Picture 1 (spheres, rainbow, N blue to C red):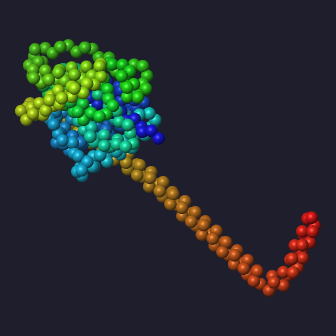
Picture 2 (picture 1 turned 45 degrees about the horizontal axis):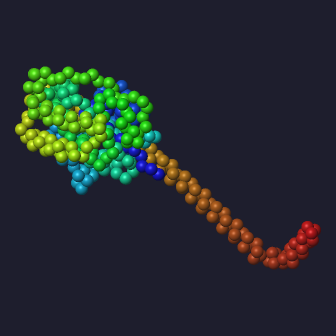
Picture 3 (picture 1 turned 90 degrees about the vertical axis):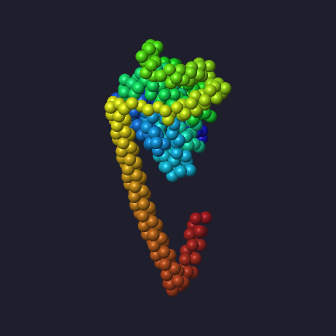
Length: 351
């Protein structure tokens, strides 16, 4: 039996990621939803566990600073991987298994371990232009442009580094799905949602984002954008690793100004994660209830069958006792010659 393909949809192209996740998942997770990844209960479970892994690393979804993912040797790391495996087991259905979350790239070790053995994981790294990404975060979450540019780099660099070794493609905004054929995925004609070319950053935006942060983000984008059109180049990895090391080193010096909108958005996401975890617990309780009922029914059937076996054995023993009593009786012995004569006469009539 061949391994089921598991598609990891991650990266900075949130609109593309949402559309691709919905397409690959066959609409099973489609709801009138907010934004990727909260496209439905299935992906909310993925997002909730991703938030748990980040929290275990001392980070939140919008924190671009580095955070080590708990390893499989720690109790916490084993628990996170068991939770991920449970989510994977619950995603039944035909076609590929789909895990879609833009933050997935930051916690890939947990999901890769959960998929180990029974699946063939492949990755789709969605790509958005850094300033467009930062502008969207500022509009939706109140995050400064500099923070958005740094978070873009964190998501892109972690997804690239932690996804090495997986079959993968890089997908631009609005790109056709044809590139996914390299992963063995057969998709209908079409592509991601079309996006307008974002206007170049103005002077004030450059000043707010910071020339170093924005410049490094654009360098990283240029490399990954080239991969999208020409294929992955292993010689670029050293450059990307150097960018990641510089990003890690810069973390101690950067302090975000407080922002009520960002805090409120973070609280809303935490509440959504708590609701998703509650839904997950409810689903597990329901499944346990179903299993308990099935087990009770099986035990009842087994008890009935045991009773039937005992009754059959008792009837057989009674028959054997009656037969032994008849064979051992005086009348049986006395009539033995007559039975032999009758048997011979019966044979004679039949010849």
